[in-house]
Length: 200
Image (cartoon, rainbow, N blue to C red; front, side, top):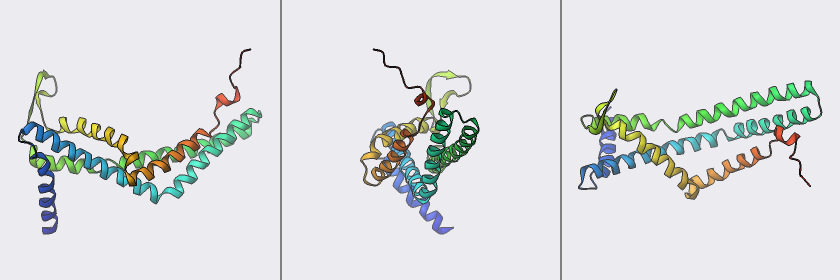
């Protein structure tokens, strides 16, 4: 317990430093909150990448199976083999479900630092209120720290999303994910059964 308390003190000291960089309190608040939000994003994305690498073999198999079954179902439909189409389409839907829920699980893994960040902010900014220009029905005329944190978190997600392809470790992960996007482009669709007519 003493170790945990000491760890929280160390983290508190590191995080509050960014809030005190500027002499203007509101600038310091937004700068510190942006750094905190960016830390949440980076830790979350690192968690996703490690989970992805740990499960890559399974993800590869599910992804390839989804593309293969989709293509077989479309080819069966083109051959007017209704029975084969239904069988392959069922397999394709099951493979899609696996891929979809794996993506949801990975996305959820990116958000785990957020409750900890908000818990820390609660210890520091519970009494801080920001006045609103108008009175809102549910919120009233002031809002707390959570109201400012989430827009800043979204901004941090957007900026990191643009920058990660240039960062050494995340650049590698981005390259692997691009491979999946290329594989998806090899998937046959219903539109391929009726290519556009070229007019003379």
